[in-house]
Picture 1 (cartoon, rainbow, N blue to C red):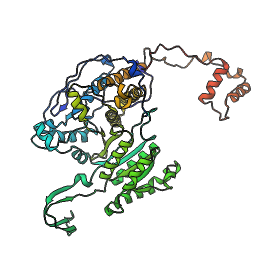
Picture 2 (picture 1 turned 180 degrees about the vertical axis):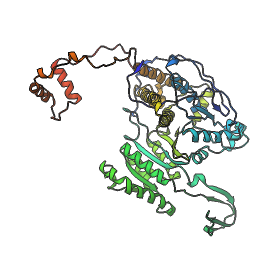
Picture 3 (picture 1 turned 90 degrees about the horizontal axis):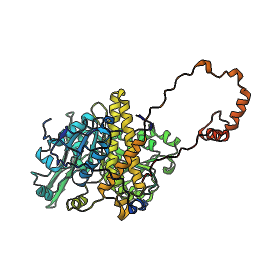
Picture 4 (picture 1 turned 60 degrees about the vertical axis):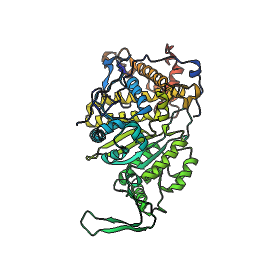
Length: 554
């Protein structure tokens, strides 16, 4: 068997025996992949669209794919969450990934509330350490329990969001949130929108307490032993106050700037920097650093690419208030923004709403390990989808769109394969296998939506249920992968016997030149594909199509 699709994406491994934390252990029954397409669904209009608790995770072993064809996917960390997104990802891994990859090198960490409670959050610490070691992480949505949920779940205490520990542990630089697009389906923005949200500092790392009347003093004590000084002193006259203290660390803004401007160039979009520095004077440093790096190292490249025409030829600063208005107006897309932690969170929520929903944007944490290697954690930008989970538990049909989850899985698989290849160039065949698979998976996923066979948010009332949609994509994925295989290997080309070589002395080179010039329509001295095709057609030697027995892709 040989591959005849050269383009690649990354692949990944799932752990049947490397599972950390308390697992809900859903055992999925093997199901025959449905190839049915009822009239109502196939014709549905496309809208405009370490010592922790260990337990083995089990998946169905049923598969129509020969196990011998599997390749061991590169190692990565898989962080499991709960509720509807966890249920859907169990199905996706079982039906889309496991039939094609040996995922025994994936390390699995269960960050459900009960698992964190049982291990007193050691499972979170272990997941962070594993992510630092491997550098590629996929994370399902998790729950940060409210006081009511703590009681309902019988937890010993309320656990905070794991995101803070991950950002600190992986030296978080930025959270990249980009719009997801499907060719042929109109969503919110016509072209890509990129966003970099500073991953550390601000309100999310704040210390606070309830206080009454008195004096609040914020004092800075330098590490070098020099004289301490007061940052702020204020008298509190109310009986009830909340005192909040936070800071914005700016050392890694240099890394954020390089990452942001490089991505904007690659995506061919115009960059903007967003702050509230006119009022919050302390935010001036963010803008100043971004501007200095842009002018010194990137401006000329953006000018050459014509990407500063819409911003007056310069890197433009936007006040956060103005940015909220532009996000509504600039629906053609083609721009990128970078902002502080809190502003980035709010603005990307707005982008998600313009672009249909949070399920249509990515969320990737970018960090660095101590040796400077890039750590990337990929997740969907939405939560666990509690309402659908409650319907599922009640025995009702659900229709979850897994697009954001799958884009995150693809991203993590790609990064894992990239790191593996950089570490050992001999694994290039693995990288190619993985990237080809993820490219094909994305195509199968997008085409399922394009054929009007999406979930109900995309295809309307006749849309597929959660399980039907996953089965349909699995069917299409398997067909696409099967069509890439040739039963017989291509012939090996060898040097012909010199005794049969054409003697150039007998060739009329003048006539040959006239014939060549006839088909070299632009005088370039080369024949492009169009010219070559025209030549073969006129000479009557163009290959003709062979009737295909391929079944319709519906």
